[in-house]
Length: 169
Image (tube, rainbow, N blue to C red; front, side, top):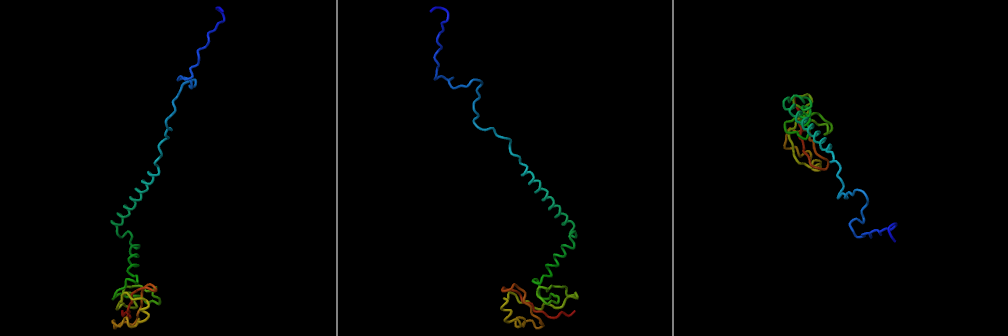
C-alpha cells in the first residue's frame, strides 16, 4: 500500500485527562453564593423618628405656651380645680355644702354662696357602712351643734361620717 489513500489511525482518546468533561465554549466558574440584592430601605424608621420629633416639639411648644401664659387655659383649668375642690370626699370641718337629697348630689360650696345650706361641724373618719347604720346618731354626739348625719363611702366598705349643722348666713 503505497502512497495514496493511506490514513494514519487517529490517536487514542485520553479518557482520564483534564479535558474529558469540558463543554465547548468559554467556561465560567460557578458562583460560590447568590448575589445580594439592594439593601432594604429604612423608610419606616425614618418616618417614626420624624413623627416622634414633631410630637416632642408640639408638646414642648404647648408646655412653653402654658408656662408663659398661665391664663391661656383660663376656664378649663379653673373648671378642673373647682371640680376637685367641690368633691364631697374632700370636705373638712368648716366647709359648707349645698342642700342635697342624695349623697351623690352633695357638693362643697362657698359659705358666702346662696347654695350653702349646711356646714360641716365634724368628720368621723374610717367608719364602715354597717357601723354607720348601727349607730349613726351616736357618731356625731361629740359635735353638739350637729343636726344631720351623712355617711360618704363605697357600699360595703369604709367611708367618712359628716356631722352637719344648718348654715346661718
